Length: 291
Length: 285
Image (tube, rainbow over all chains, first blue to last red; front, side, top):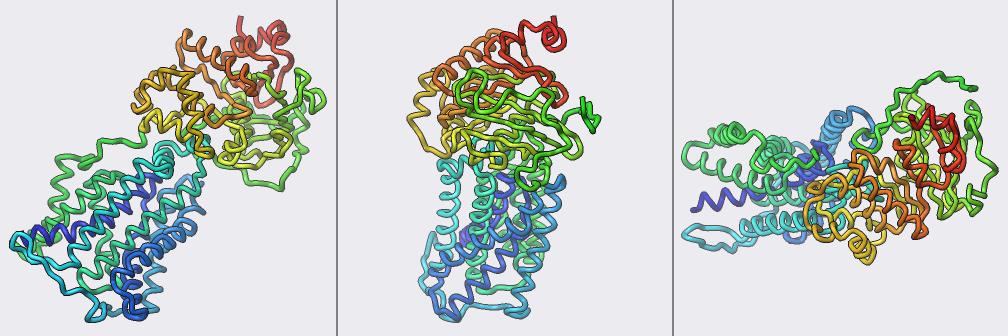
């Protein structure tokens, strides 16, 4: 039970990270590889806000959300928009976003140096609960609740709102969207902002969960995020959610029953197995772009 | 033909779908290209459209290029308020490029486009819809994964006008019955009605229809043309692009016959239909 819960906590962070990844991919058909850098930057920003500004960890989350949104806008304007009319816009954007990610990380290193950073000692509430005999902290519960609430909110936004309709219209047919009077550039920018805001919250939550932030934390989760969206079905929001939770569970159980060195082997091996059985991914049946 | 360029252009007239059209770089606004002496047959003097009313749309010396290919080579035409005009011509004659330039999907290389007296030559599509100029794109381009109702809601992106959606449901009851189905589930004819309805909810004063009869059964084509006449009767100006030239000229007040990106003939639609040269060259026998 304890392991199940631990898997869900870490998995919900993976899911939140991956859902931002897959949102941009699903709507815009672009892979934004600066997303992991946003994850790392926001972890450092979160620690800074607690350490220097003396904020409570809960207050840092809305701020990190906004910072992430701004980073998303920068990513779109700098790494994607200038290249959008190139015939190779997919690869060009992929590579320019890697470059931008490198710059973000370099800025972090310049500001904080190469060492691991932690939250101040008394940052976390000491409340714990016992659920079915398992010990969980208030922080862990909050991580799960915040992640799920954000993902549900995103799903509702996409399914119900005017902006969501615009996103789906662009996902299916950007030219038709323009003909209908949708400001495609603006919706694109907003999509990046939302995606990065979610990735930023995921980064801050992750840093809280392990009480540390490292320069390499983005690259560490990057592959996991990509694996999750491939397994979930590229561009599928529920796929990212389920895939993230599955990955979290697989990791935790691998560590528990085998050893920590087996973690990635088991987790990624499981993902490969799923792809062998269901090459389109768990929720990949919905072909958004082909009509 | 006083053309410098030779192009028998194998037109990249990709209509709307897919391809982000390689946009011609914007050159200084209003550059009238000198290398393109205004169309083969310049229209009679401005402001008064064919039927004598005020022109709602005036296009002057329009040039559209894709890379080095000239799709439209100095075309001028106009539409009087409330009129139904048609641009006809073979596939690749430049019809869709003209429509896409007018509706802001493609940036023209040169030329001027006036809508209700304002210069809209470089105004992007998403602004024009809010100003009352709407295109119904070639191949319908309904969003198949979205519901019919969502498609119509997207048509009101700028206005949020729910009453307009109700009116479209009144006009097309078949859409109302299936409003929560994905638009991809509709037949071709129904999708065309949805595409037209989706344009009408924006309450356009000028509607551009690009090949609305394409790929439809004759009976459905009759219906499409009936709807077009209704739109026109309601006071909306219609610019109709058609390969089905005879049918389009029968419906229109004024016609322009395009050939290789230029206007080859123009005049009152009835006269074009009676003109042997036009009939033989463009309308088949």
